[in-house]
Length: 67
Image 1: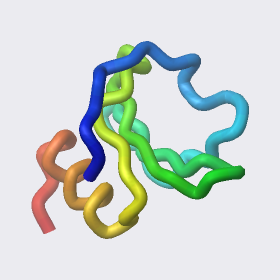
Image 2 (image 1 turned 120 degrees about the vertical axis):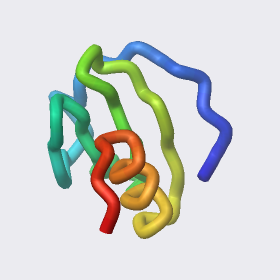
Image 3 (image 1 turned 90 degrees about the vertical axis):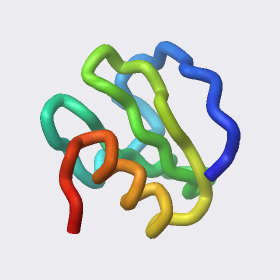
Image 4 (image 1 turned 135 degrees about the vertical axis):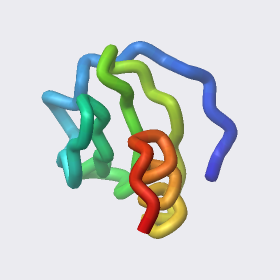
């Protein structure tokens, strides 16, 4: 995972594929760079990174789902 500065986003309407949504949270992948991000229900980026497995684990933690 890369260091994160919470940043307001436009919600991923352009340049992002939404891979999963849960409780208002979104896990997205950038269509150009293939990096991942997690945005909260207020469209603020809470995490980002390059490793899909790691970002999915983090997404599950944010959304209180433990596999």
